[in-house]
Amino acid sequence: AQSVTQLGSHVSVSEGALVLLRCNYSSSVPPYLFWYVQYPNQGLQLLLKYTSAATLVKGINGFEAEFKKSETSFHLTKPSAHMSDAAEYFCAVSDQGFNKFYFGSGTKLNVKP
Amino acid sequence: EAQVTQNPRYLITVTGKKLTVTCSQNMNHEYMSWYRQDPGLGLRQIYYSMNVEVTDKGDVPEGYKVSRKEKRNFPLILESPSPNQTSLYFCASSTGGRGEQFFGPGTRLTVL
Image 1 (cartoon, rainbow over the protein chains, first blue to last red):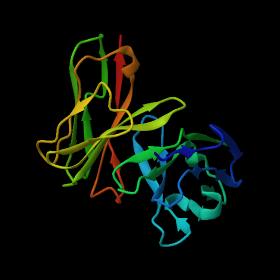
Image 2 (cartoon, rainbow over the protein chains, first blue to last red):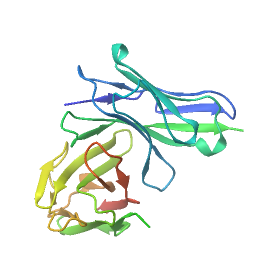
Image 3 (spheres, rainbow over the protein chains, first blue to last red):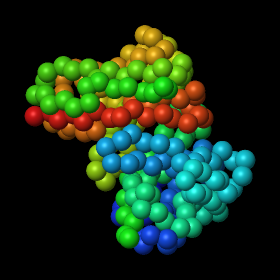
Image 4 (cartoon, rainbow over the protein chains, first blue to last red):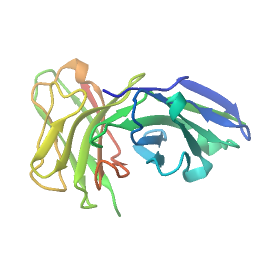
């Protein structure tokens, strides 16, 4: 089975600072990779998706993620944090059949004024 | 409006009392899935369905049942709930496993 590791259950940055949320997956063959965001008391919303078309994936709200096969990583970044980015972020991976999904434990992003 | 709806949103019940959480989507999606979210564990997939009458187990199916008799509906059934099933449950749908999953608002279940 796949597994996803998100380093850091809580990350705190100042408004305007770089956001870096880490995600590592376990697989010898790159599957689909996703980043989702969850705002308080809401369901999850897709930020971006890696499908092997390009290693640098741009998503909504200024977020992007880079797929690095050699490091089995898919870290999420945003150059300048905004207060509205405060939320919980989940990295997820699909299996080869694209039916099963495995989520990381999540990283709560706090943005300080 | 395209959406996934879940009912109820909140439920408190007692051990052993059968319950059903409904999930409905209006996007004509073939793929639907149920997840539970627990602190520190992220989301874990319970069951998924690739189409009507086609369902399969996810990572944590024990204690749950599902059915997919219609394309739009995918109810989650707990025949005999236990306290370890206290959790936040999400239903999701997509055009297929490769597509974006659209999540419902969640159902917070407490089993006493």
